[in-house]
Amino acid sequence: MNTIHTRRLAALATTALLIAATGCSTRASDDEGSSSTQDGVKVGRGIDGTTITLGSLTDLTGPFAALGKDFTNAQALYWKTLNEGDKICGTYTVEEEVKDHGYDTQKGIQLYSSISEDVLAIEQTIGSPINAGLFEQLDRDKMVNIPGAWAQALTADEQNAVVGATYEVEMINVLNYLLDEGKIEEGGTLGHIYFEGEYGEGGLGGSEYFAEQHDMKLVKVQIAPTDTDMTAAVTKLAAENVDAIAITTGPTQTASIAGVAAASGLDVPLVGNNPVYFPGLLDTPAGPALEKNLTVASPVAGFDKFPAYFESYSEAYDGDPTLGVMFGFAAADVMRQILEKACEDGDLTPEGVTAAKLSIGTIDTGGIAVPVTFQKDTSSSDSIFLYQPAKGPGGAVTVGDGPYTSADAAAFMGE
Image (cartoon, rainbow, N blue to C red; front, side):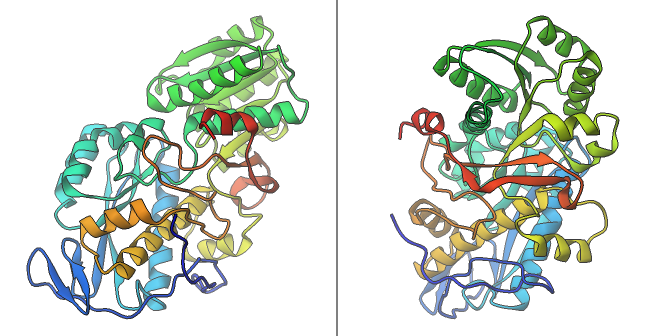
């Protein structure tokens, strides 16, 4: 396993935002066809002179628009700061081609086709269905892609760099946390409300594994993403006397689950897969119940661990930022490290970037995200961060000092 070479802290925006930087000798490129070499570095698609273009297939108008906006803005801020300072390998600046698919799978695939000949790699693609629909094209184009999704199926494609644990591993870990804290017990009863599709089924796979390991009964309630009133689902779980409710839905459903449970007297722990929550939920009637009972699995730490990130982002953009900001920074830093590795290897063509992604080993983003190692058909991490809703930056507070890993998660991954 390769190690990441030289690291140092660099300024992000106007305050001390941390990025793990890698030393690299200065090189230049030209634009003399589909592939060329200058100063020992091969270049091709997505590189024009000393400019690298990256793509983003995001959701700015659909159900995950709040996260998509924060992913996108954070990455724009990251590259703006890097472009003004170190650059990629001391030479290359980064431009972005951002497309909004509104969480429409077919539109996302069409938008990919519209940019695929112009970008070197994709720094975010939101939505498990869209990512899954791109497998063939990503392979054909040797397009390294960072999904804004954590479905196990995405690890089957070597072009994907999933930054964080899969939904199964997230759910196993967060349920283990409840067990460790004595909030649930062996042999009890769990409920799980989940979306149909890969996101929901991934979270469910984690709760099924956990329930089997701990002799627990699991009551399952599948819903559609368009369902917003969770009264029937919660009523069913209350009738089963569940000890906790696992949630793999969107934020709207999370608020309804918490509100209905509180109103009905079902005062039990709630645990969720990222991205079940956003800060605006604290201002709804469900806010107190969420603060009291919800714990969320996350690939990234909260703003309470990196306050400079919150300050710099808030100076640059209006609104109430979610922890999608932290993921945006982390994903951009992962992409930077892959590009730096490709440059060190002398090959910044799509094929070279793919080879760098496969050979780079464990990537550390300085604690922004859990450490990740990209291996085919395997979750890139066995760890999560845990956070709970709270008033303050990002509407959340990180639980514990660092990433959390359970024995069950390690066993699930065959470690």
